[in-house]
Amino acid sequence: MNQKFIVKFEQGTLEQVYKISELDVTDGVNGVFQILDEEFVQGVVERFAAMRTDFKMAYDRHEY
Image 1 (cartoon, helix red, strand yellow):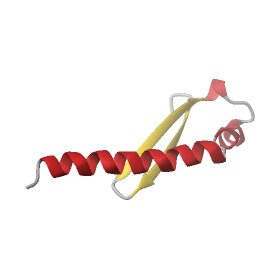
Image 2 (image 1 turned 180 degrees about the vertical axis):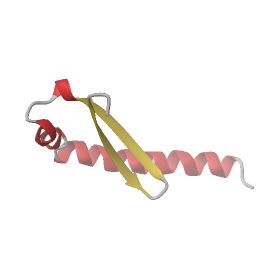
Image 3 (image 1 turned 45 degrees about the horizontal axis):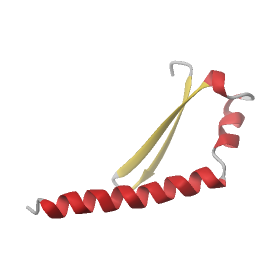
Image 4 (image 1 turned 30 degrees about the vertical axis):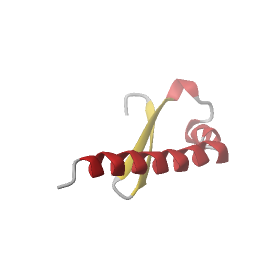
């Protein structure tokens, strides 16, 4: 799609989307998987935890 690989992570109601230009990777989709190493995925997991915390705090400020 538009010469980009779209990588999407979902956890419950949260999602993270990364767009990687085809020009930025070699070896096609295999190159994308090389970028998505263990360190990157750990960052994604930590970011989900922060996103969940931020949303909960915002929701709690405006209890319905």
